[in-house]
Image (cartoon, rainbow, N blue to C red):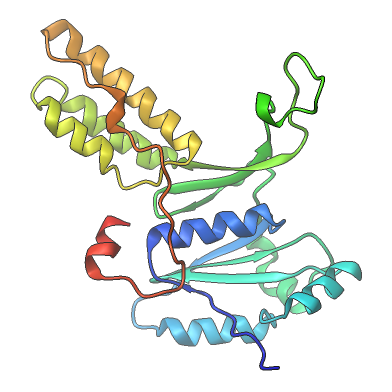
Length: 239
């Protein structure tokens, strides 16, 4: 049986974030982030990192490595930004020699900031009623770590500045379009950030008798995305 091709080049920002979230959910909590400098061929950087750390592994090989206490690697690139992720476990000497000072931990207050997003792993809040064990009443703490995806602090600050700066001059339709096409996939924490921003905008508009912007302009559904398949230019812009 032919070995399954290892795919690592995301074709859209939405797909890039979706795949990073997927890796984080599956225990890839450590990461090294880099950028391909101008003048360098991204594919040459890919080949170097994939070969240097022997990233290409089958599921069976990854299972065997985990069982024997070794870490596993995943590699992902979008345009000129690349991320090398790894699980807990013994790390190759060559990797530690090169990257010791660059390794970050998603569970230790070191979120991965890429493409305006911030990704980390945190303890869950409370289990939803529909997911509680039978005959359980009251609030039940979630004891599992969950992936949290937010708009990064710097990006949200910029977004907030723009939206509040125009609170008295822009129309309701302008804001509805801006919120709907915010450029961020509506993961739950991002929806909360946008709803908070919407409340700030409405509070700034209210004293001037301007119409209130309804929250139905915020997207709630995350659209399916094919991470590694080619997308049209229009699709890239939308993502």
